[in-house]
Image (cartoon, rainbow, N blue to C red; front, side, top):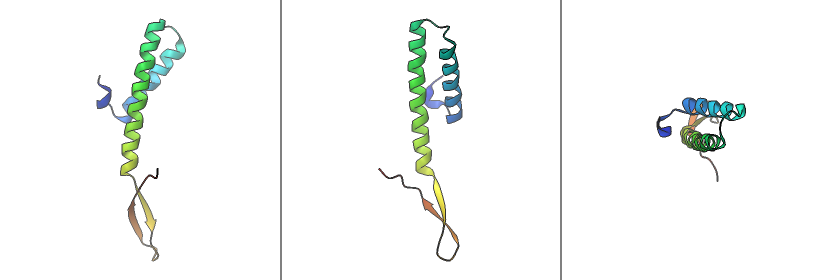
Length: 77
């Protein structure tokens, strides 16, 4: 399973699975570190997907006549 090919929902599910495994504390130290590293990679992938989606979001605003118009969402900073 290549992380870059996962959807946001799939990535989040994998991240939750790893979190539960780490919380169960049944792994060796090395296995826990490996899971932690994978969790960080999954977290970073989620952030990339969210940033991409945020760039595609449109905000619907009303103009002075009360008509709805689409406007690109621009993230400041």
